[in-house]
Image 1: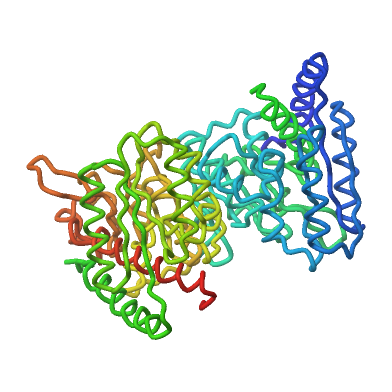
Image 2: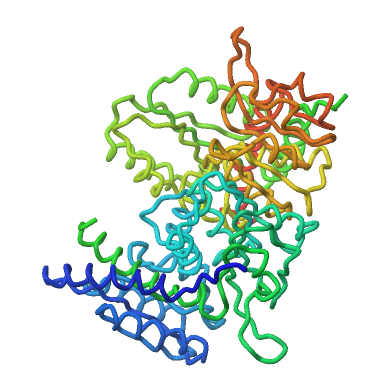
Amino acid sequence: MGILMKGKPVADAIKEELKAEVQDLKAKGIIPKLTIVRVGADPGDMSYERGALKAMANINIDTDARALPENIEQTDFISELEKINADTSTHGILILRPLPKQLDEKVIKNFIAPEKDVDCFNPINVAKVFEGDETGFPPCTPSAVMEILKFYNIELMGKNAVVIGRSMIVGKPAAMLLLKEHATVTVCHSRTRDLPLVASGADILVVGIGRAKMVNSNYIKDGAVVIDVGINMDEDGRLCGDVDTDNCINKASMITPVPGGVGSVTTSVLAKHVVQACKMQLSLL
Amino acid sequence: MGILMKGKPVADAIKEELKAEVQDLKAKGIIPKLTIVRVGADPGDMSYERGALKAMANINIDTDARALPENIEQTDFISELEKINADTSTHGILILRPLPKQLDEKVIKNFIAPEKDVDCFNPINVAKVFEGDETGFPPCTPSAVMEILKFYNIELMGKNAVVIGRSMIVGKPAAMLLLKEHATVTVCHSRTRDLPLVASGADILVVGIGRAKMVNSNYIKDGAVVIDVGINMDEDGRLCGDVDTDNCINKASMITPVPGGVGSVTTSVLAKHVVQACKMQLSLL
């Protein structure tokens, strides 16, 4: 029977470390601050925002939640963003995406100050993740995957890591972060032939493909470490991952649950990025 | 006995196509132009420059070779670069690298106009290669790999591609370009355990690790397609690749020679990027 790698202890450990760092900064008169920019009132955005605000408050990171009108024009959005860029009291900026149609993300991404871009929207940070440059901020989800692997002492050097999914918010950056830790990395996707065969070569399997319980024990090598990034609803309307956990847990040595796995670490990673951004901006790193 | 995939016919086909395109542009009064920026007089740089100038002349692309003093200061270099950025007669800029020590590439890369950056120096283009956005220019060498695979009708969708090497000029961009064509891509490197085993799972093997003749038949699956990106000197002072071609040619179905393989396609790719840049700048694409 494999071990469930829960996210909470990982998040708690990150938070404890950050609390100490934030306290040190406070002693120097510095308070890290995250500004969240939300356009409209999408329930998913609002739920994520509430979670993020709560996590920041818990660590004593200041926050500012800007709610912009659903129909805001691009020039107005950019001018709001530039004000936040210029505001030295804000160290991290999170723009909740996707943005409504009148706002062109391909244009806007170039305007967020790279040093405040804590969720990898600006191409400067995208390039840094590709290059393995640690002064950039990877997207929070693949960063959370790496935090979990680190917390549970999973050795990566020379191991075979297989990533299922090639999105820019999970698969590709996860592949680059694993490569940076010297894993041999395979990226699979919907066109991969014999996916169970490829996946079952993995010592570490990261799944972020967005299909409920698609990965069963045929995809798992005996003793593999499985990280499930998916968040889906099953037929009974219950939250589930991309991995059929019950079916895999006897074959995997360790597996993250959904809910309670990767998703419970992302806001702690966000907080970590804000503190790191704050320190970099004040030349404290 | 495998087939040698020579670079020359690939380069010739690209050149023929470009000549026609350049002729069409000329009829509209447009002449694509590449400006090469060289600092100092490194023999390798000068040799590459001569080859590039000759290739452009052959296709009727205008060129301007700027030789800057070895000891040029960063601010002066940047101001030269900005003049070239602003010069509307230049559509592509190639800065020969590595630059001397007083010039910080991490700073300078941000100054080359992304739309003229035909060899993937600016992070905007690096991010586009990572994202699979075709409006960016990948580095010329991995682009040449893809041109060879296309010319020789190698199917990529769903195939297992293994890339040995994870540099930013070959391995990582090659991995992204293969992924864009829907191959399942594995990136290997010096820390990979049992590299011959991993490599011999490849339908398409791309080798860019910089070690003379390292890859022998133990790394090759029967019938694999092998692309050798290495350029090294063997013990007798002769040019050779990272693959021991003689040893592998009976196992591989197709293999690129060195010299005469990937290296003979790169300047044609450079020319292709210049024409593409010219058309994009004039909104003709």
